Amino acid sequence: MTETVLETVGLTKEFDGFVAVNDVDLELTQGEFRGLIGPNGAGKTTVFNLISGLAEPSSGSVRFNGKEITGLDPHEITSRGMALSFQITSIFPELTVRENVLGALHSGEALSNLLSRYGTDETKLDRVDGLLAQVDLDVHVEKQAGELSHGDRKVLELALALANDPDLLLLDEPTAGLSASETDTIKRLLAELRGTVTIILIEHDVDLVMELVERITVLHNGQVLAEGTPDQIQADERVRKIYFRRDH
Ligand SMILES: Nc1ncnc2c1ncn2[C@@H]1O[C@H](COP(=O)(O)OP(=O)(O)OP(=O)(O)O)[C@@H](O)[C@H]1O
Ligand SMILES: [Mg+2]
Image (cartoon, helix red, strand yellow):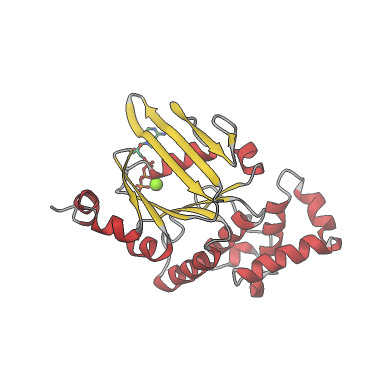
């Protein structure tokens, strides 16, 4: 049986009378990799903010793992297994790569306590080092995070989002500002994650989305314009009009 991880019903957000997100219904099943695309200002980031508790909906509801989470604060939602990456993640540049991931694991605990005792906690360390190996950052574990290249910092942000083994990962433009080879690295890592965690990916690079995901939701003017497989979306005339042929 496929389990629903996330369900939004009639999700709506108004800013001073301007409707940024309008009656959005989304349903994601466990392990699904969903792309969320749409022109600038379509409402994609606002949808993420509503799902993750960073903004409160004007109306509508969000259910996560079968429970209503509408209106809960972001920390509560994170502790229930949702991870939001790339736009709000903070890396501590003066700490090592390993310490950053340890810090994410123990969120809520004083960092100094952590640093004084993490060396004795083999299980946690193994988990952190395993995760860093999974994203190919194992050679950099002892390096200060501030010394990482831009691309490696993005990869570290992904590792931080994965640290607590989330049920749902929200990725807002993970390849923004990256070189072609850095983008390839993120793309490969996301492909490896496919099926292991439910993911919603916002991404401007439509080709990248098409290659990675199984299903795409297209937002336009705050509303769901279309939803379907990459092939269906590519063939959809309404989508082509607003998205692939904006000059027509
Ligand atoms: N806090 C806010 N106050 C007022 N208007 C806002 C606020 N946040 C977003 N908006 C507006 O809502 C609309 C949707 O914005 P949003 O950032 O969700 O779009 P987006 O699809 O993520 O765009 P982009 O592709 O450029 O990141 C835009 O017109 C934006 O100006
Ligand atoms: Mg955005």
